[in-house]
Image: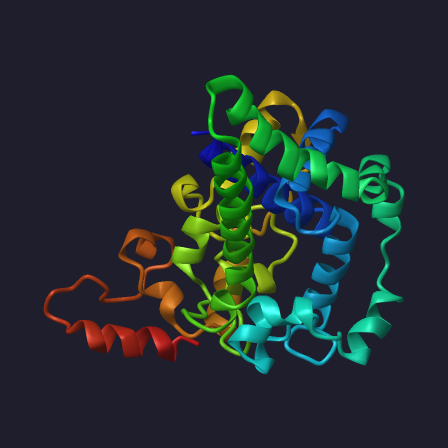
Length: 289
């Protein structure tokens, strides 16, 4: 149980904190919520939020170019984990020096977490997750170390890296077929809503990072909405349905209009008519682009 809770809390620190808040400023978080997210992100152990957001902003601004820190054009392994072990491309180094980070530099919570990241990581990611099960319910200390730190840390890292690798290589492209980023439901399930990546790269300011509001495949959106209900989050940015549909029609691969559950939002003539073969509807939907 401690393992699951730690995974979920650290995941929220990544998705609602480092990503949707500090990287994209897609909503505004109160001081208590920012402190909570900084603590949660320290559990994840994916560097400090400032550094994470810096590379993520570069990734969006220069996606799939030499300036992209985890350029998916360099292959699955590089996008997944290789970029952390290899010397960054000179263009990545250059862009890290010019990206505007003044908003995070003005955030005392973010800068505190950056300044004290090493001790925070040691405390939040190693000591507490390992010591709490050992102390409170007599878990073997060595077993707790391997499960509540090593296994949990490995799982969380790889799930987060799936967004850089799997969600840039496998899946549909309903909103822009010219981008490498894709819609990857399995990644969204594992990464708490971060797999709707084709949408996210087209509309990076949307706090939902996806078009549809299914909390089961976007837990982070549910968390932010709950915080908004509590008054801890405000200013949630989102994209109008009309803008989404216009972009999908203009640039998408046609799959946006083939989902039976959402066909009512922009029905294709004849969709659902049993006298018309589905493959004909597929071609009709693609022609709308």
